[in-house]
Image 1 (cartoon, rainbow, N blue to C red):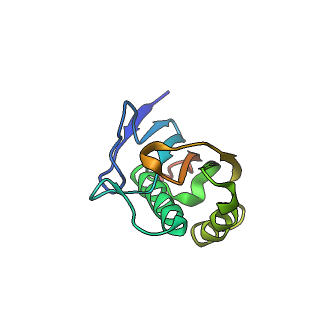
Image 2: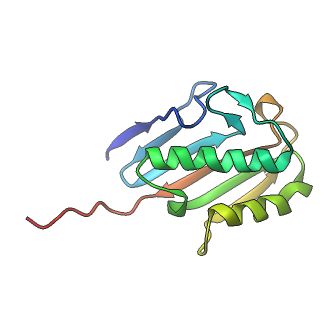
Length: 134
């Protein structure tokens, strides 16, 4: 088993005792992302659509730091403080993902860190590395 901690400055820095992601062999566990702008570490201005979009951008940055992309995500968990915003998640997710879509759960929660309206975490499985024949 090969374990590697994933870290990038293109996504928000951890605001607690966790890593942005942990890679075990070809599986990457992405920590929850809220709509923080990496450069300012503040919640993005705008409505819930802007927050959802920022969360997908943050997940994308961490996925890329782990040598993957959003198409490698096999499980996505979405946490919303208002489940009536779920149709917006579906709409915006369509801009970042194509079929086949990952397995997904949507969970209504009372509150999220920094008063965010949305948080997402994911599990990603990377394609095996291909090496040129010698």
